[in-house]
Structure formats: structure tokens, C-alpha cells
Length: 342
Image (tube, rainbow, N blue to C red; front, side):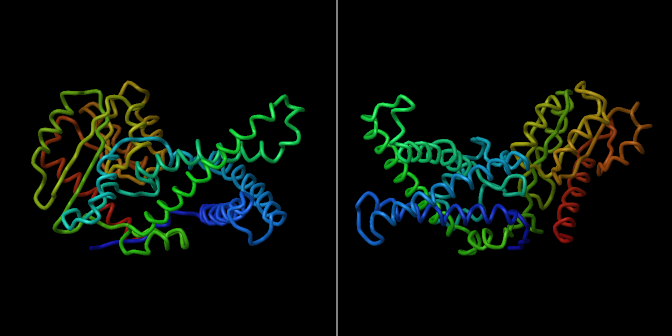
């Protein structure tokens, strides 16, 4: 199978990942000794290193949250159930079956994590880590509880929460390590977090084609015409899927949540002037071919529109099956060309 490499993870992301992993493992090791599960370092040294690593992890969290907000990478963790069932089936039984050759989720730089990963990371970031941190801080400042009107009898519940979340984190780490070795080849995901480069399987080969595009138009009749014209995939294409958004706002929401091979944008949307609508789509930095279409009266704007970086300008009344196939093939060529030149 053909494949190519893309840079997915920046140096900071890799530093954050491995730095957090190291600190968490040390916290696990010293925490168990503080809880008197064994005696290796001694209680005093174990407590010292546990507190030191805990404060280091809190500092790392603060900086990482700031980085995610500034860079917009927080969008990588937004909750979605799209293809969740297919991904769950793939990891539980699909990877052991020869019938399923491809991962149901198409990973891109804008969508690094599949739906199952997003849910796991959200639970880790919004539940497990905050509860561990909060209960740990309460532990650390136990001598000051009376100053903030906290009942010292609450120490047992705080300890229980801290311990339960620690074991939940341990379960997450075990599952995370297991999932790290489900890639193809075996060490590919580990290498990705070391080098930053992810190996992307190219399912678009000469004997197998998949294509999904987004149509943004208020004209529902035209959307049906496009859907009818593509009911039968072109020769050599195994599957062809169209999703329809009625407004530009809906279309942009879909583009922020899913990955598409092409976007077809109606210039006659009521959301705003067509040049502004094109700019709003391009501001998402999708790296996805953008095709626009309009009625005969907009033909005079073709040169102006093409200067904005769209790959094709179509006249609505002239769009038929042959035109759509040509546009799709052109988009596929652009995708292949971009991958070869990276």
C-alpha cells in the first residue's frame, strides 16, 4: 500500500507528551511509596520527589493550556460521535480481522485524533487530571484547612478521590500503551511521537478510490441534482460520499469537525458577499481543494474569483455528471500532487 509522511506533532507537543509521561510515572512510583505500598526511597525522599514532580506537572499543565489556546490546537479535542462506533469496532475486533484493511478514521493534520481518542483525552483532561490536581493540593495544604474553613474530617474523602483518580490514570496509561502498538507498522505511532512525523496510508490508489466532499448551497433542488448525478461512482472509484450544508455557518461547523477531500461552495449564499464567504472558508486553512459555482449572471466574476485561489469555477446550469466527475478527478490529482511535493 502506498503511504507518505506528514509532520503532525510539533517539538512542543512532543516535549509536553514525554515530559508529562515522565512526571506522571515518577508520581505513580513515589505516590505508592508514600501510601506505604513498598519502601525503596524512604518516606521523606518519596514525599519530596512526589511534591516536586507534582508542582512541575502543574506548571507544565498551565503552559500547555496557554499553548493550546494561542495555537487553536484545543479544537483537536472537541467531542464528536462521528464514526465512533466504527472506530470502536475497529479497535476491539477489526484489527484482528483480515477483512478490514483500513482504519475507518482518516487522520489529517487538522484532525489528529479519532473520536475514541478525543473522548479519552477529554476525560483525562477534564475529569481525571483536575481531580488529581485538586485533591493533591488539598493534601499539600492540609495544615491550612482551618484558615479556609475546611473540616479536617474531609481528609478521608479527599484521599479516596486522589487514590481513585490515580488508579484511573494508571488504567489510562495501560490502555494508551496498548493503543500505541496497534498501528501499522507496529512501532509507527511510537515513532510519530518521537519524530513528529505520521505515516499516512494512501487509500487512493489506482484500484481503490474513496472520496468525500462537502456541498454548501441553499438550493436544495440543486443538491438533489448533484446527489442523483453521483449515485453511481465513476469508474475506478469504490465509494463517493456527498454531505450537504444549507448555510455557510453550517458548512464551516462541518469543516471544523470533519475532513473532506473537496468543498463545493455556492457563490449565491445569503450569508454574505461571495468574496467574503470564500475568504471565511480559506481562513480555516483546510488544505482542501475549493470549487465554487454560481448562475450565468456571475460568469463575469470568474477572473476575480479564480484569483482568490479556488481550483475551479462552475456554472450551475452546466453542471452534470461528467462535469462533477471531472472536478472530482481534478481534486484527486491536486491531493496526490500536494502529497508528492511535501
